[in-house]
View (tube, helix red, strand yellow):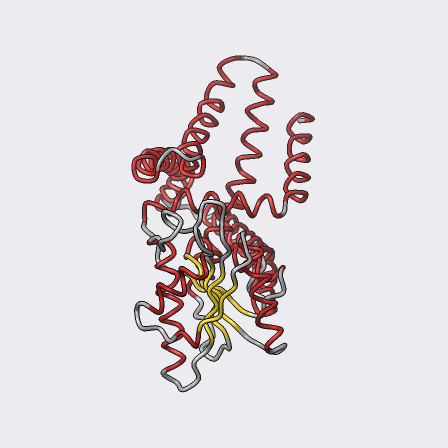
Length: 330
């Protein structure tokens, strides 16, 4: 049973973290470590079983990641071309394509290094493998916990529903991505209003350099044009970033009621990172996600993950540096 002790230990850490505040990236890491140690323990246990079925399972477990890696690279590249076709050639739309190409490049490097008989190339390949494994582990933790976080239902007795802005189409119109957020915000409002305690809805978004009016004003107009009560809308029209969305909305809510509670609405691919930012900004509330087109998910998720890596840059730089030193010294 000692073989399973690390898995149980990290699972307990994850459970305690979720109970304390589920808006922590450490919860994702603890859960990822728990599943990793559990998988290792199961493989060791299975390796001790003398049967054909056990051998087949072990072979599948070894080969599946390699095959899955190649399939993933192909899917990412295909999605990248679809993003370019539908959304244009902005850098943000190239992320899935670049990620797929990078995976194939690492695979090619690992295959070529043993054949080249070059110590320097072997070090490069070994370093690339270690860094790829580290980043892949974090990415799996991120998307796995983000999925779980998105399944948790928000409170139904909040004082505010905060809808985050995302830019206007043509400088004046609400695009489908933002409309999805507004519709989810309205649904949360109506669900609570049906119980006799309608919250206030904050539309949060300032005016960008290419916009003719603040996003919050266009968002409010979108809602009122569809029958939403204007007297239940509060405008936050100063913010330019997600951090400012949350900080300025928090200031409005805490000024009206220091003991407020809220739910923040954004798109589902953005929900977990928004939750991490909400915790940093001291917002008293969880984050709910709205639906997003499937083709948009890969690039958007990669972008969110990169943003989380940057938010914890010193930890990640330190770990990557240590892994590089280990690889060079080996």
